[in-house]
Length: 456
Image (cartoon, rainbow, N blue to C red; front, side):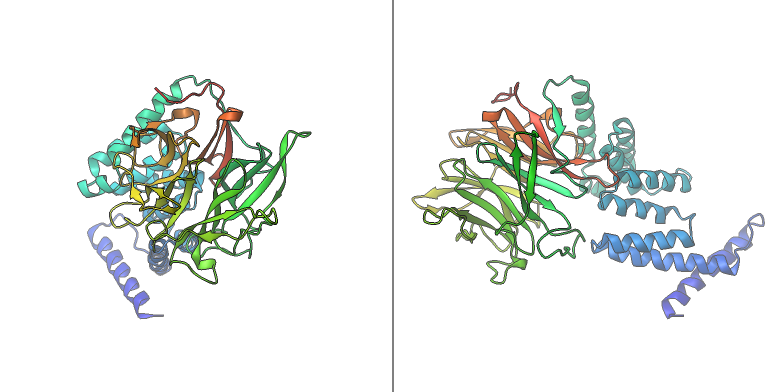
């Protein structure tokens, strides 16, 4: 028996003795119960270490073992709920949060209220979410209220409730199950006159069939699907594309003529690293062979930095690019940048205004081919919850205030990777589907027959 465990046992035994001297109605803990509580505390502390490192699967295993040893400890059950939330098991997280609240006799720590509100928010229980966000606002210290963005979350719930009461004529429907799976799918792009759909997914057949050690999910690959006019469905789905590496790969833009593309590659998977993080690569079809060439990093240090740079989109004249970077990660999360060509070379990338970029996440931009409307996702602006999709009209290079697309596109969970196809009067979006046991991104198609820009 190691020294730290002995110390825990002594502390718990002393606590048990104290209880025995202060009340005669409570039975003295048996030695077995003391040992179980000590083991539970050690497992709980081990779980906290894994949880704080982002190793959620290991953390969950420790917390579950701790709960077996001490099933009446509400904090252990609370952390099982927290960990399942981080792993996108929202329905499980909600059930466990309810159990933790009951075990605490309705008197949990203040930060519990934020979690309970958040998981109800994701599951669409908006009235309950609002009640507990307001409890969190009352009970949390100012620093945590700011960190958890409680006033914004209250605003999001109230906005979502109003949106969901409105009868929207535009329909959002989940894409074919031949495309969507039990894994995450996102990043839809139409090509070849609507006959080809590219998307990104984190499936078990990823190249190299390996997992990312940070979040313990499979690395992402680019997939291609072809439209079958007879079955009216997508088929011939494959990730056997030369673009895919053994790490993270995402296609983010394909030109209208289908001859030029942009993608994001995580450099950890490359034999010859360009920078220490993810970079934006370009590729094109060879005029001599008619086949795609190899991806090449964009040689511009204000575009590809030592931080994460990716999710690039471009105007049809290829003179203006928008992308995402976390280079200001000490103060913010991810921000949107714009860079324009000066002659044949890219100029200096500039961060977008603060009324678009917030302290939260701004990501997955899509610029219309004419460069007049920028769509993007954000969780730092008033919306329905999680990442919502917004549009900003650009006039003479000046950005208009972002407008939330509302429930025609957005849900109370994360919505991102919006793609607009006006010629087919439809859009595509990746939304977190909370109906399954594990909440994962699925691809959705949106009927935009009644949609027009600018949005009033």
